[in-house]
Amino acid sequence: MTALLTDSTVAQPTVVAPPPPRRSRGPLHYVKRAPVALVVVLLLVIEIYPLFWMFMNSLKSSQEFISSPSWWLPSEWHWENYAVAWEAGNLATTVRNSMLATVPSLLLIVLLGVAAGFALEVMVWKGRNAVLLTVLAGIMVPGQMILLPLFTIYYNIHLTGTLWPLIITYVGHGLPLTIFMMATYFRAIPREIFEASTIDGASIIRSFFSIGFPMVRNAVVTVALVQFFLIWNDLLFAITFANRKELNTVQAGLLSFSGEYGQLDYGPLFAAICITMGGILALYLFLNQRIMQGLAAGAVKG
Image 1 (cartoon, helix red, strand yellow):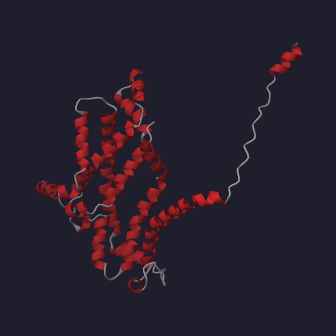
Image 2 (image 1 turned 180 degrees about the vertical axis):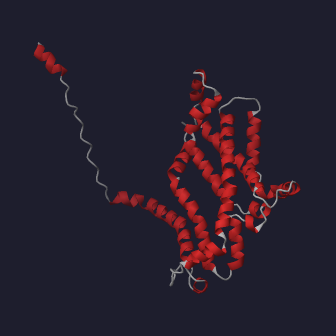
Image 3 (image 1 turned 120 degrees about the vertical axis):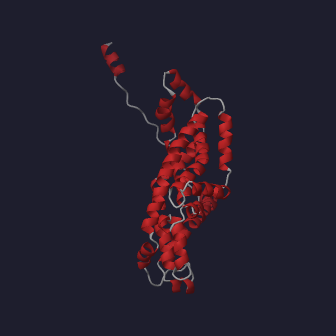
């Protein structure tokens, strides 16, 4: 009897079923997927070729750019174009000005936008729908419509010729879109999670920092990067409100650089564009995974 009990308590080895045999893929399998592969390759070429074209032409002389096909490789590699672009385009100053205008604007947009999106979707309060409609209306207002009224206000309070009008305008113009996007992401979180935290005694502020924000942090990165691109590439507000050469942002600096060299020396002009694009491209590649996760979070309801 003892022997039987001992045998029954011995752990039996787990039998793992062998994986099913892998089906061989015939020629028809690859023929069916060939159109998809061609579309992917075509999209890659469309996305990458402009960057390649810009880089190749940044290493040409102006004479070669005009006389030879622009898609051809340079016969002589003029790396000095980058040094000329850095000095003649005053890129150190323009990049610094762009950072001074972009970083504070981005911090305020993200901070206020995430908090407002949480309040609109998670909190229950009177007038929420009216505020949401106002936010949606703010997205529809084009920058050209508010340009002259804002310039008049900034001129009367003596803010023109500084970077403050850019920061104020970027925050006011970018906030509606940020609030709308963050409200969409918070809407994807099951409401029962916040209700359970309230029953457990958590305040609304603790629910925001402990539950809401961690669940949308990838979406925050996506929204922040979208706003960064919009602010960094802005030209309309930059040349209107900060209308001094020493306050030129990157895009305004490229415009003046093109006016000086645009018809004479294309190589340094393309080199300047490559330099300013390099940082943005590196930032996008670094945050690429979080961006994809943020976009997917907005597409699937949790």
